[in-house]
Image (cartoon, rainbow, N blue to C red; front, side):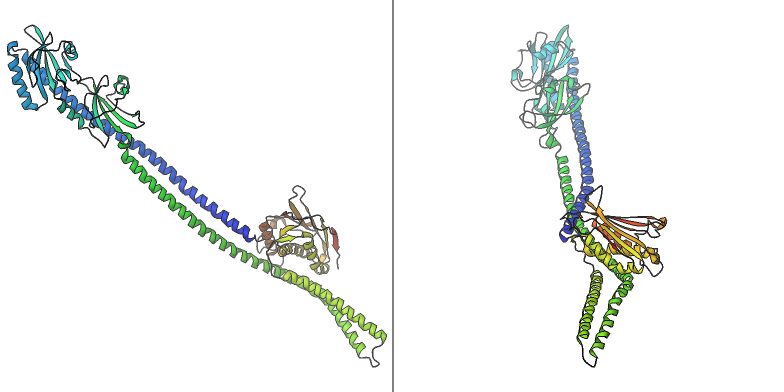
Length: 579
């Protein structure tokens, strides 16, 4: 049965949508997973690479500054050893000469040199400031220097009011203790740290153990140093550490920390995470753009492909439908050929009566004395008989033409019982000719169903003719029964049962195959049952066969019910007797 145009369009729309969804799911989900996994792995690898690069850079600069401090401390310790062999009254000349040599060698790195006695009084000094007899007895660096062989102070302003730090070495001369101190040029030292620069926001600085700045950041200003930097526990026996920290403004910063070996300071590098990972974000944004373009291409292809594919399916369906229609028409022509003998015999009887009556009327007209009243009565009777037999022929030919008309697959609300009665009347002569009795038991309360009338006629006629042919000249009984399914009231059942010889078991699985037939050569096309199967399947129903050799065959059709109204009551049992 052909679907209505609206239903077919809806089917193709659903099919198109399903194809598109499947193409999108099969294409985009794997690509999304692949891109997601690759981006995630790339993010991890790039983050590790950046962290490793920053950590290596900070460690390298920390080692350079450590080397700088060790070298300068070594210079002062060397001078301290030389000074221990010099008379105290020659200290001033010694400091003047040595500072000049240091400046020639290192430039402005060493700002001054001073010799402080054990009381904290600087009694010898060489440098740009007037610090002779300066009292350092209360200075932190002096007190710590007296307790250790050497000491490197934190950066402080001190008496001169400028940031600086001191290298101090303890020495002994003539039984007394002295401190040789030297001021390191803060600008020269700070430039070592400022050279650490990455990106737009990357800046390096040094803090002491308390977290106070010992250098100026490159920007010239610095927000509050996070307290975690001064916590020694965060290093856990590590000399370098990479971590992220969110500041009070909500910005995430990347910190690289390294410990100095010479002094209790920390080298700190800080950079905004967005700046540090900028190239990665660019790569990921580019990947996202490419992914979106790929998705757009897939969507475009899915729409185009699904549309073209469904168009091809629709064309194939139309061709298939046309071929099926041709097969149905071929089967119908074959059935008409099988009915021809019975129809010809049925028409022959009324035609013979009409010829006989016409001859009798001719004899009445040729009488010499004219037509008597009895003759007139006979004449009228003959005309009435010819009219009756003509109508009989008309009914027979009308039924044949109705069946022979080209099949119309348009569905309509039909009464199955009426269709079966028409087929029984059409095959009555063939049944009588073959000594077959066709009986019916039709449920008068069957509702109408939506079906193609001509296709339902084709199915019932094929099954009836097959039953008559199977019983041959020996005759038998064919019974057609309609009812509602006992388990499911939404199904209508049609049974065509005969008591013929039955179908061999080895053929039961093949009887619905096209061109398969058990009839003799030239007596069957093998299309009848195949056509029936196709029509019933297209309607959404089922057709089954049960057969026992020597007992007969039963075909059971189940059709889905589309209730519109209850069929008109009709005689539920009838019989077409054998001729």
